[in-house]
Length: 142
Length: 138
Image (cartoon, rainbow over all chains, first blue to last red; front, side, top):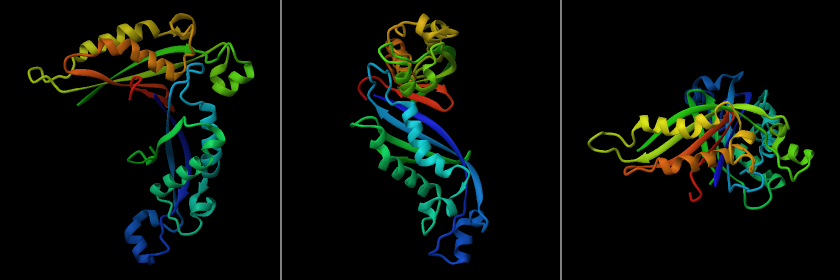
């Protein structure tokens, strides 16, 4: 069993503001992240995939196939976009915190996984999202 | 407790299978299938697990660890073309996964001591791609 981790980057902006809270409550809860015009980050996304080593290919996962999946499902829609206005999942009530962005990434990858990878392996193990160098979020999927 | 030692080597490789066509190799390995090869600054992280010896306060002698990595990995692989110069990559494809497994095979018997065992090999092919390998049974 090997675990392959691929790192991707995208630049995007967001505003943290919950429709369930008052303006004052939003300011208190989210601080600077509540700035009405939004703000941006150079996000770093790490995707870890596990699988048995295929004896012929020497691979646990085809990197070009993984790249196509992540490019098509995540980077194309997220890079140089404003989450709150450009990404469908965040147009209504879902606040684009890194936690929620990770969930959306997992949903998108999982929903399209079998189009790229047939069979039990490889499987998605973990996704990590670094918003800045000082904070990182991880969602373990297995 | 875990200890991790890092080492680097620079090497070239090509990822392709002779049984596949050029297009199939390109599909499977992407740019890594270029027949003339290309190179990386590989970064290796070797992690040992164990309890410190009460007398020395160490899990494993770091100098010994450094020497074992140097002799068994860096010297034979640094500034080499893996497919042509480093067996078994004349017979198997030198993907990051296979290189990590080969490093495990070379290091594991030499790093199992009374208090320590090899826990994980992490091999960075680039900053954007790394593989973790911890033996056949995980």
